[in-house]
Image (cartoon, rainbow, N blue to C red; front, side, top):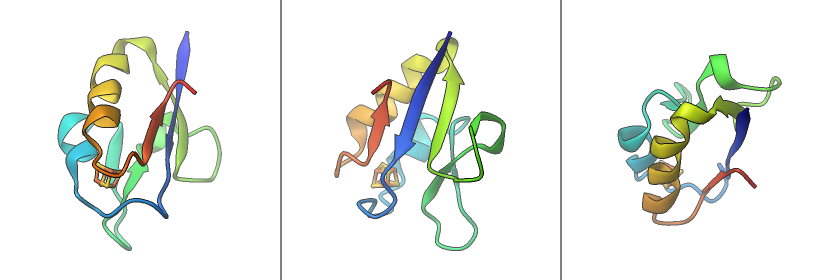
Length: 76
Ligand code: SF4
């Protein structure tokens, strides 16, 4: 079973915490340093939506909980 992750890149202030808590899921975009879903977990051409395996739910939830502007959504 897979879990959806989303990044609101408009809301993101590049605090970087998601990339610390879940670096296997959230990687910095070269253009602006904002996080993108790692290419292997993207569901389409957009960098802000992906599906991760359930085993990565823990770090994904950590990233969601620690984002200061609530720009990460996991499983919704
Ligand atoms: S933790 Fe939130 S504000 Fe910080 S880089 Fe990630 S999405 Fe952006």
